[in-house]
Length: 147
Image (tube, rainbow, N blue to C red; front, side, top):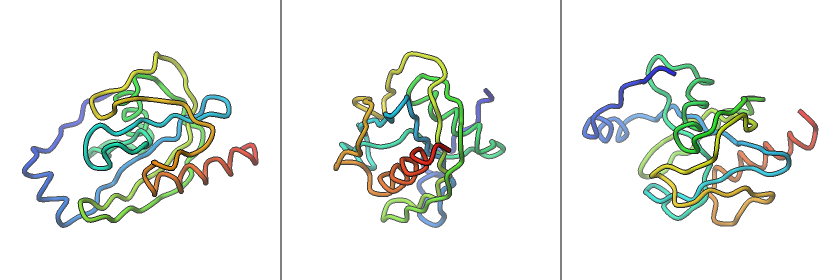
């Protein structure tokens, strides 16, 4: 995978004051369970969340989704379905995220610095980021119809 440059923190902070961020989130399934990680850093510290991240300039959506999962969980995934675009305008940031359903492909799951733990769930925990709950509900409904 190609490495994409990160903006210096000062530029990133200034940008997020005025513009939304294009992001990806991935719901990784293994049979009837999905993976969530518990945030160890702001925003949403202490809440369960989906692996994902900011799309870099020149990066395709699918590549960004696979990169984010690899970075956060140390696994390779197979993207199965694009389920939609979701918006999360909050005080600190405004994300416009592109959500995918994926399945595990290979690797041993480990978390990076952003998360304190990783777990498989069959039901959405109450302490999940609110807009991630919506994405997971939509994915679970699609899974019931056997994509």
